Image (cartoon, rainbow, N blue to C red):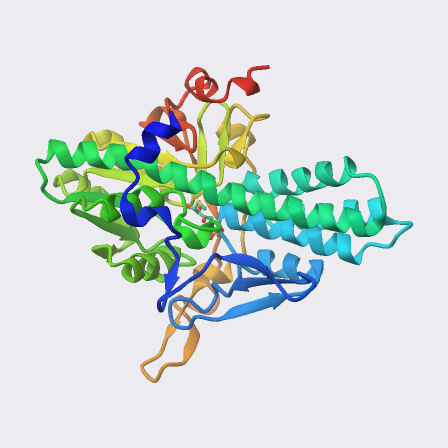
Length: 387
Ligand code: MRU
């Protein structure tokens, strides 16, 4: 299966997609002579300033996840894994296991919806439990486990790109080489993972393969991940795109201006219900009504094998109402400012995610191939979860 894919790999796609001012980046990595620093890209300042930040304690990692210096399902998973590594460095000899369990609990409490976070923390705990020996050996085991989680994320996202590319190529063939228009919501590009991304990985692969394409980017209120992050990423890679208001997608679909929708996901149940950034469900409804294929791209760490019914079971994060009442942006003289957009006394609610039921999804683009969004379809690719 994979050898076939490798043959079709677009030339430029073999290396990382993350190129900032001519330098390759991942979103998170270790620094320092003893690998004691976790370095991240500060996503709160994008797209206006590019800055990296050093995290030296598990508490700093907790804050970075909670306050969205890092965000996106895959990246918060990787950040939590590195956070567990820092926790291992901080843990006492006698209280090692106890300290790690406390750190695991603290990290899991930061953001509830994306399953990658809990998956990464549990993988770290399992790796540490299976490692006997002195404290130094356990710390080294934690480092290797965190690096393996980050590397696994990169490889999964890369393969997602190659599988998704084939669907974009098919759309291009149907259109006889005319530009393929793809709509995406939120940011599921390299900034949301360690590299490549999920929804945007097929876009980069197709663009690098020379397919004519164009992306409609939903602005994604309230945090504007589409406007701030997806637009910045696609612009940096040279992919043609237009930013659109969140409510425009239905209109574009009615007028034949969208060939396919690709979004990411934060948690997907074993039956294929997908939680993603708030507003995704409405795009899926519009896509169904207008016969537009709707794909969800995810690595296996986003599946929650213990959940079946997404609407009933997936916890939806409710965030601070201030995010809805305000907007942050750059002033004419270059300052980053936050302004209120409603009367000072207006109350607001802010659900971070919604659930798109499997019946609205055309296919789940995973690192193992494209699954039909049903328990049977998913288990064909993940037979080991057939319990
Ligand atoms: O910015 P976040 O962490 O609140 O949003 C999560 C996401 O990145 C999106 O829902 C995305 O589309 C899922 S894929 C990472």
